[in-house]
Length: 294
Image (cartoon, rainbow, N blue to C red):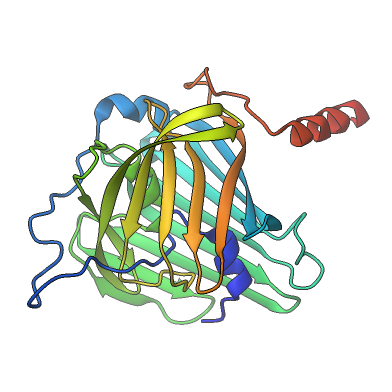
């Protein structure tokens, strides 16, 4: 699988990262005794409002911008088919846009009360000559995942269900009850197998000078033992607003040298009116200029 380290940097990942499993003594299972996360239904209406959009600037240590990450959750045209999680990773407006352009698109379709994935599709365009198309079809009721890469034969994986994929894991984790010091598990399909991701809730912290103002946040650290689509080694921490919107205002990922930070620069969700329309000023001006030109 050909994946550039730049794409790794841009995706950061929310749930597309790798951490180190908690240390254990005597070969004990580090996940023993940790419960599976339980979704808070009261959060569902805001987090799965069907009209939520995020934009992040991704930068390296010192503020060097590498690119941008766009995320959105929209209701499917047929509501019976649930919701569509759309992500785009690009080097547009970053220092590598001319050297090594990247434009990767990820689409996850989820449905049901647990918002489980049934279709995951990836289009990768990296550099000047690499393109890839991947499709995952989840058969949650049969314990099967069908996978196809470009025109290669379909592969079938037998997996214990229910299970999330790397993007639906992120959104489902936002729905969990965050209690400092009380970790929970989120089963996630990656590296061709089921992985029980430990999500550590580290505590509370005020993040200052965000586009939402000074924000009271919950600090969360997912811990994994898999590489995911984008093979990256390091610890990743997410800062969620400590309220019913659970807006991820910042993501930081440590690398061997330095770190990467995804900073929220635009947010849209009418279900969270106190935050809806928040935007970094320079992007607001760009939008106004674009509107005037039209």
